[in-house]
Length: 575
Ligand code: C2E
Ligand code: MG
Ligand code: MG
Image (tube, rainbow, N blue to C red; front, side, top):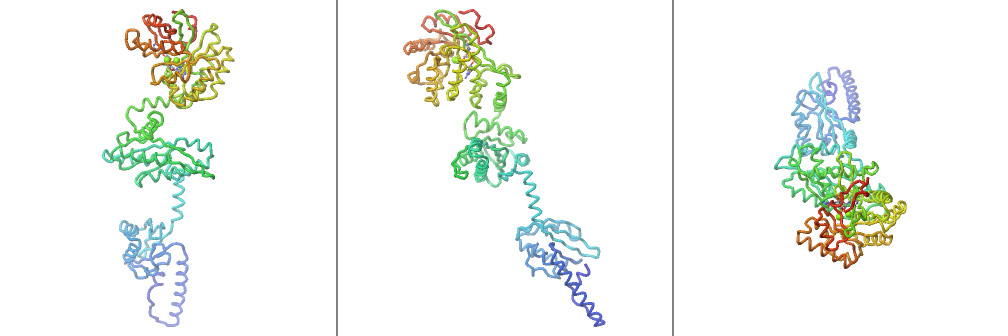
């Protein structure tokens, strides 16, 4: 310290001229050597004396602080340096703040962000025993960048650089704890539909490009105060800050779905691909103050948008849980239920009213759920239709029921129910044909029951399949007739073998006048079109008598027998 101080101090007077001059020359030579050495080190070094006066500073010192070289000179007061620095970077520097906080002489390491040159430097001060201190300034930009990148890799998704699920949960926790009744936050869970198809069709590279494009559009939809993260392969989450009313979140959700649904051009051939988004929204603190709860609620809302309301976005609502969770759980469980043999067919007889004999049995599906007990078809058929399991399930029904029917008395008919979606699968014809062959069951003994909804969507394809099945020899039956569809036009498009009057018209029959008129009309319709008419849901003798009297040929209902497993059902007594 002393030596360095002397480097910049004024020359003293020579007592013994030659000796002193030599010593001085030597000292100056040594001084400039040290100066050169200090100038070549990567750190910036400054030496202060006890009066806060700079006695020495190397050129790296001014360089790293972003101050012009000539601005720092020996004899300069610390305050002058701080002023020069503040002037350079336009604000009071961290350097100054650190001095104010820690005092001058204490040994401290201070992080200093030098905005002017966009570098990160640390300033370390070493108090010196003889008074004053040495300040060392070090450029740590590269080290910090590496560290930051490393920590980014842990907390962020490598493809998109967005926060990953784990770090998003932390950010969400912070946002929830800052949310208030008047300053809410909205959590939006965004699920990209059809992303997997793009991956399958064009490969992962194109899939990755698409994801980046999605992120770009998402980022353009949000404000800087919002947070965007990638929470799953094709799932994103957004924390929308400063939400005053739900409408604010709805506006953002619409903006996102609009932006994401515009076509993308990806891949080497600039293929045009489209995806869409389903968004679930939960608001904190109203919909939850715990991260897991809020995430679950936003996901439930997304599930609802996707599977129930079929809208672009949906809000969480209390009470949504139970139904949706059950539905979601059933969907997952159903995937294994077929392998685990949990499905079973019950059979319900139907009779010829005139002769009073059983003409056949309708196969009705049951799920013997290991925990929930017997589940009825209305609880799981719609889910099977949605999650694409209806074909496998339907094929199982066809194979099992035809096998069962092969044991019955000759001529006993088998009725099976088909969902409209099954008609769109070309394999259906083959499965039915093969199953009949295996069971050695004549096709004319098979009745295929479909509902009016078959004619709502893709009716041309559906009608074609029905025609093929009819050509095979099967009888085609219109089930639940009178519900669901207002036009009778489809009776002209396809010639059914049988109409089953929906049980809602039979329940008040014969006392209810309207029901009676309707049943009469349907029987008349069947007569004119050459179709057998059957009544469903027959529970009373009075109904049997009246139906017989008006010329309804067949009937089915608890009066004749409930659906039951086949053990002995076909031996029971008739009317
Ligand atoms: P559906 O084909 O109209 O079947 C008749 C339904 O009415 C059956 O309900 C049966 O138990 C019930 N039922 C029969 N007689 C009476 C009665 O006298 N009174 C009352 N109150 N109800 C009676 P289930 O078994 O719950 O089936 C409901 C629906 O599920 C069926 O209606 C059918 O559309 C569908 N379904 C059943 N099995 C299958 C299947 O294997 N595949 C497909 N796609 N759908 C099926
Ligand atoms: Mg039916
Ligand atoms: Mg029915």
